[in-house]
Length: 223
Image (cartoon, rainbow, N blue to C red):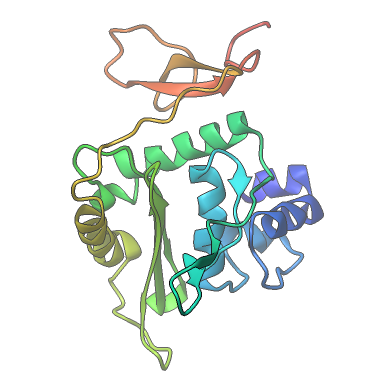
């Protein structure tokens, strides 16, 4: 991620983060890619909401409706959304985060029957642990730590401690909700690639996985 940030540039990344809902100041350094800047849980959860909402950002609101004393609804619904990411880019990023759940540090965040995209985060000395993720219908952020900062445990990680708590909440919150699978955008195609090399492989490869790419950017393709 540091090499990617170096290639893209720090300022464009900060600008995009702010468009996605991050309001905190972000430090202009390559360590930004590693989480060196502190942000509020609601901010990063809101930013993940852009991915779950296929690139549309909807401002966070704690008010469902406003009604008068006689019951008349004065205001209802969510604020208007704003597109900040292309649907194809949101889909690809979601796919990457699903990989973290399927075969990465977020494995304990799996929810049976649902396609889950999520990411763990463990700060230095394990003083803060994060687990932020989503299904197509619900985005949830979880923080584990002490009010007065101190280590949760020298051997603890978000994948070990926070992920199971997050998954338990999601199972309860999604009870009775029918699972959804987001459609693949027109500009995206799938290819079977080797898990280790990222290059196209055959169906018999035991290390083969399905990955998604923008059209014309499949590894090894000429067009």
